[in-house]
Image (cartoon, rainbow, N blue to C red; front, side, top):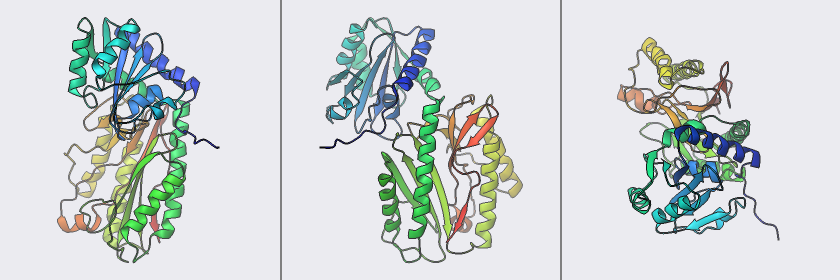
Length: 384
């Protein structure tokens, strides 16, 4: 019989690189181990996957990465250990309803009892886990090591960048095929269902499909409502490819030439996107790129966005990684990959209903000389 294949396992060289980089940061911080939490969703499973290759299907997961010796995984009883065991190179895999004492035992076995960094305190670690760990290891000093971890993970290796390029190639093929399905009279969920099928058929491990059209109140996963000839159809694909590395990519479609109002708004969107991308370069703060976006809006009479919606954010093995702007500022460095989708404010309700969902999104690699567009050299509008 032929066994299924896991597509998101990293190479041995890449695992060694990640562990070595994290251990160097641990030594600099005086830490003997990291305790790393994840949660089974597209935003917070990636930290554990980054150090263990374990795809956290649901619930919580913990990896203990010591300064010396092998890592260990402790999993939620919600799901079995079979998927973790399929990784094969990781030998210490446990399941426990009492993770605090279990993690304390692992730390003691690895002589990590003085100073330990906790990763995920702000978003993934249940308070009960943290309390029980502190109670089970009363002599250990625990510190928040989330920033330490995320600073290492933010810089993508050649292997990771190729994983992101693979996801880009797949989603471009999905959109090419999907264009043939978008026509007046088709139910929305025929489009979103076909997009799901195509992404899965190309090996993507996780993702969402969203569709928006006038009146642009929200994006949805589709319904029985049928497309109309006057529609502008905006489709958002956010998927982790076979490697688990994510891309957010959007396409705007019209049946023939769009209206003058739509074309004027689209021109502003392209200009603001291009300005935001062109502002990206190593050495500046992530939040600084917002000024380039805002200058375009000022020229065209649009309000400056003040809501905490992200115009850029890191992306990789999680669909949202630091930095993000506004809200999680960092110095941009060569090797970071950013998802760029400039926020905009459309104050007029009638115009917002007509064009409010028209958006652009893609991944940008920070390079030594500035930036590289990883998917589209130029942003297309597709007339069907």
